[in-house]
Amino acid sequence: MAAAAAASIRERQTVALKRMLNFNVPHVKNSTGEPVWKVLIYDRFGQDIISPLLSVKELRDMGITLHLLLHSDRDPIPDVPAVYFVMPSEENIDRMCQDLRNQLYESYYLNFISAISRSKLEDIANAALAASAVAQVAKVFDQYLNFITLEDDMFVLCNQNKELVSYRAINRPDITDTEMETVMDTIVDSLFCFFVTLGAVPIIRCSRGTAAEMVAVKLDKKLRENLRDARNSLFTGDTLGAGQFSFQRPLLVLVDRNIDLATPLHHTWTYQALVHDVLDFHLNRVNLEESSGVENSPAGARPKRKNKKSYDLTPVDKFWQKHKGSPFPEVAESVQQELESYRAQEDEVKRLKSIMGLEGEDEGAISMLSDNTAKLTSAVSSLPELLEKKRLIDLHTNVATAVLEHIKARKLDVYFEYEEKIMSKTTLDKSLLDIISDPDAGTPEDKMRLFLIYYISAQQAPSEADLEQYKKALTDAGCNLNPLQYIKQWKAFAKMASAPASYGNTTTKSMGLLSRVMNTGSQFVMEGVKNLVLKQQNLPVTRILDNLMEMKSNPETDDYRYFDPKMLRGNDSSVPRNKNPFQEGKQGKHILYGCSELFNATQFIKQLSQLGQK
Image 1 (cartoon, helix red, strand yellow):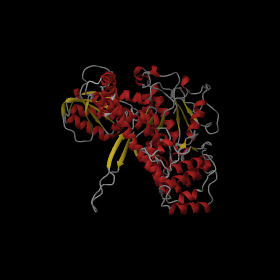
Image 2 (cartoon, helix red, strand yellow):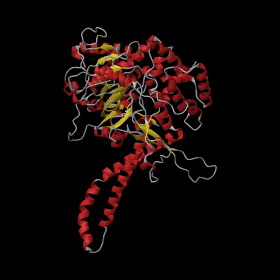
Image 3 (cartoon, one colour):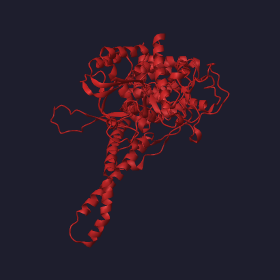
Image 4 (cartoon, one colour):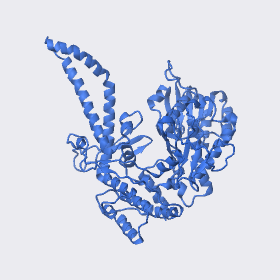
């Protein structure tokens, strides 16, 4: 989605959450005095929205002394106000009514992640009346925050019920119309909340005959109805800080996953993508199992349990912000450089300390002392900064080492390079069968991913005889063939619809190994790992977005439908006469990415496998 927004969606959602935690009054940063102490009660949905944006420390600064799950056992705290942040579901409403009856808190600020229906609101009112707690219910708010922001310009629609809107859910052959409606409504509700938070009504484009079109029709209708109700419209007035917007409205491009099934299976080579692919990385937090090393334990003793460690990879982490898009060998080199510069700073502090301890009346020492006092003072004042630097270096050393173990054990550099060649139709240097049959190259899943990319990208499907040979090699390598079964059906169906997606002709270059990281003094033993440099990829989604933003005529996008919820009559698909490209001033394009669910290749293969089961 291309959006012309001055403030990032991350900032906007954070501001909205802080306002809510401040009893729905705008939060002023430098207000003196103690905050009002309060408890925060959320459900799992609320927890997922808050946790990538606000740390425990930030919550405490806002006066949150305690944050508890709605459905946990909670003791009464009668002299403290409670801020609720939950979905308006039946069971949540029941539990809130129970809280009112049990008089758990001094006052109740009820905030719904998504809009609450009239009938459920009446249930709460009745419960408050019955519990004589009407005066204690201070405010009831619809927050329209039903989406999760992971980065400045990236969001996902949901996490808790993601199987409801998953690729599998939408593409399973036995889905009923009613189930499909529910999936579409869930997606539309989140997108509607996203635009309320963004403060703008988009122009919507989508391909025909896909789930994307169903979402577009419903979203257009929902936005239209809201704009028509002038008194209650969410897109007017100052609440949205309309002044932050340039004159151009955002363009929302809705794309169906089926236009490109190869990219989510593709092995990756940049830091963030690798972390997501090979580690347990979820809502900006990575969980690592740290091997506790070989201990001198007596024979027959139980092996030591692995320690689990979690790290948050957030926008505050400067190293992560700078290097998450870099090729992996470059990241290893940068961690090493950071470590060396940290050690140099640390040595300087130690040297100054030892000089300060000089004794005797040596004149040279005395004059050095006065120079060094100033230096030491500045060194000591930079200590907190130094400690933070050390924490980040340790964090990235651990994360990068864990990634490197996977790269080396599974030859992921070989897979990445080979798949890039397949997708860009470059001549292949070795046969696909050799890689599939090589017991040292990758896991059964790696081999399946590689073969599916080959199968999806092939202009001409392999002959039945060749396919049988590949299937045998895959089975011998321990692969489950269900995903291939599904992709075969999908390809036969897609073939009737259109030609296979093209991935541009790009290749990766191998640059020889990195000298710095190869030094024996490095933390990272990169021996045998290729130093591949990334080339610009031109993936289907990129091309589609480019065509639609630039208003270019292209067979790929010429039949995309056009919706403008602000136009009085929705005369379907009429692309307007005004053909100004969508850009934001001199900065060029400003693009926000969203998805209904964020999966890695392992999770995607699992969904394809379920779809391919007979």
